[in-house]
Amino acid sequence: MSKLVVTSIGPASSVQDGGRPGSQRYGLTPSGAMDRLALAAANTLVGNDLFAAAVEIGPFGASFTAHGGAVRVALAGAPRNADIGGRAVAFDSSVTLADGETLTLGFARGGSFSYLAIEHGIAGEPMFGSLAVNARAGLGSPYPRPLQSGDELKTQAASGAAERRIELPATPEAPIRVLFGPQDDEFSDENKKLFVDSEWKISATSDRMGYRLEGPQIKHLHGHNIVSDGTVNGSIQVPGNGQPIALMPDRGTSGGYPKIATVISADFGRFAQISAGRPFRFKAVTMAEAQAETKTFRDLLRSLPDRLRGIDEFGLNIEALRDANVAGQAVSATDAATWQVAAAG
Amino acid sequence: MPETLNPPRLLPSGDSAITVEFSRTIDEAANRRVLALDRLIAAEPIAGITETVPTYRSLLVHYDPVQIDFDALGEQLLARAEQALPTAAGTRRWRIPVAYGGEHGADLEDVAKTLNTTPDDIVARHVAGDYRVAMIGFTPGWSYLSGLETFLHMPRRQNPRLLTPAGTVSIGGIQTGVQCLAGPSGWHLLGRTAVRTYQLHRDPIFLLEPGDAITFTAVDAKTFADQDRAAEAGAFIAELVTP
Image (cartoon, rainbow over all chains, first blue to last red):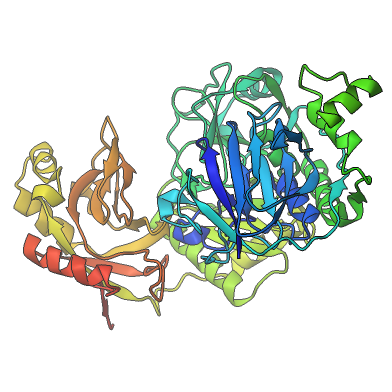
């Protein structure tokens, strides 16, 4: 059996998959990947089910070493510098680590979470149909906690299949769309307008339970205590201090603060990827628009296998390398000669 | 009850969930209607609903908007809400042992002081109550109970504790509850039970259901310790009382 050993990893990195919905009535939150599109893209590249378990890597660096045979992996999500023994590895592509080789990843650039999918998946014992880590509930496999150095992710030996890249639509630099409700009537029109008209930042104290939003103070009409009711991914609750908290996949299943709005499901992954401190805005949309976007997003997920492409005979994937380096300083995105140097290096 | 909304309000919780709100306050009648609608949906499913989450005053209905849209589902939910009749019949009753006070109930003395009575009186009153699981939420197995007598109603702590023990039985506002896992809480800690309302590798993993009736019995610290060991090995400890 092959395995990928975690040789170094920062906090906020864990095994995640499509999560475990279905037991929220018992207080069990669904967990699962912050960015489902990126998870699905990484899995598609190595032939896994869209929402198979993969490594969700937080903003910091990480490295993984193959043991006991070759391991085929794929990277998607927040881009970062990646190499195997100095050989650059592109995002949105698959790559095979030979036995003993180490994949080294830098800090996330232009996002928070990257996904490392492993061909044949990660061996583990599903609980409620999922390997996703929910540390508070003691759930997750192979480890019911965030990953640490020395952890082993067991899998099967690489199939030797040809490497692939995947063509994903560009992520729009657009406001995060929300639907008002369920408790928007706890806020004045003026405060609702303030919410959608203002620039926001995600606080550095945010985590998989909730993103604290920094911006103007949103005031309640009738105080901040409501009787607890159910929450969803993307519920934006406003506690007493007027600084909203967006609820993420490890949220409590119920909450006692008024919820002014909810991030639409099609934008949730894009929202989850906003790095701490980077300004962004919300935009209110209609139910019809939000539900149409859900269909579009579902179609995009379904189209992923059709978006796979081959990689040229040199194992280089120029487009993906260029994309991965857009935020970097070393490489010009327009200069073909620079590309070849970067790729060869 | 005047607070109960008839028909309930349909509130969008994003594009994939509807909050069916029967009341804005904690209200026994509304909670019974929530649970009745929940049961009716379970008995006669609506295509597109993926999961329901009952709470004190509302039913959160998760759905797949690709299968059914907000308006179509809303219409069906209103029809079901009208049909769903609250019934008390068929509810299970559990007896849950609690070690009150001392190291297991750090706030018992203070609660007694605040309410101008003795710790024994607080325990006697809490044990005398006839409770119902109004909802389970926040963290796995955290069971919120309705039926706390008015005398025991008191505001939550000014400073919530960041860590309270697993199995804590506490009061807060007009509610009492049993939490399963250690975690933060702003409630007043009266005691601890060995009962695990959530335990992996046990069948069932979740012991209590919304709507279950609950009574508490007082046990001493030694009994708690014995029960805790047995519970760790998978024993329910909670006793199912046949009606």
